[in-house]
Amino acid sequence: MVEAINVRKSFGAVEVLKGIDLTVDAGEVVSLLGPSGSGKSTFLRCINHLERIDGGEISVNGELVGYRRQNGRKYELRPRETAAARRHVGMVFQRFNLFPHRTAVENVMEAPLFVKRETRAAAKQQALDLLDRVGLADKAAAYPAQLSGGQQQRVAIARALAMRPTLMLFDEPTSALDPELVGEVLEVMKGLAAEGMTMIVVTHEIGFAREVCHRVVFMDAGVVVEAGPPQQVLTNPSHARTRTFLQKVL
Ligand code: ADP
Ligand code: MG
Image (cartoon, rainbow, N blue to C red; front, side, top):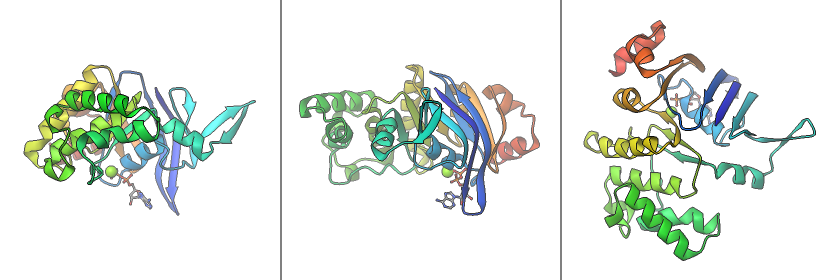
């Protein structure tokens, strides 16, 4: 589903990703751990066409990110092609960024209506189904300000699912939440994982990584330090850098 080969990315003179290799299979749930500044968000943004990479290659669903192969050559995608490719990827951020003047159901309907040009009735029915799926059937008419942070984040997940993505990227989806609201969001993500969604989750929730993820990838300073099943990386890490990090977050 995702194949990243030797991905490099610099901001000015600072190289932030120094040759990242990562393969994620369809249906796999991978958590990305690492200290602040190690390049986790940048890597997710590269996968989702939000940053242009300087070296290496990323493909999603067999299609190159940012480029199209034709007659053995690589051509840069045009903005329309990029927009089309991005529809297969859903992303959820630490900050929910819901439209404040639209209700929950209107937030979820937005992309199907205006990007996919679905009918209003179809978009609304799907949005109501998605809100039900994240446990918010009774909040369809609520405005973001009337919802808790956990509820807003669940609306944001429903909104990301509305484009029927085949890959979901989560960038610290619970980091901005009060501790008592973290569980309800992780439950929704756990449900998605159980349904077979392919997911890459940047998180400091070690319990979630251990319980739900098939694989844990530990990044530091722009490289993948180690990767493997949770019981291996979290319980018996082979690198000192991983051990030091885990001691801080556990
Ligand atoms: P993480 O998500 O692991 O905390 P980030 O990917 O956000 O790390 O950041 C990695 C490094 O890249 C940091 O040093 C950060 O300051 C830098 N960085 C991220 N985005 C930009 C940007 N748009 N311009 C310049 N530097 C950036
Ligand atoms: Mg980050």
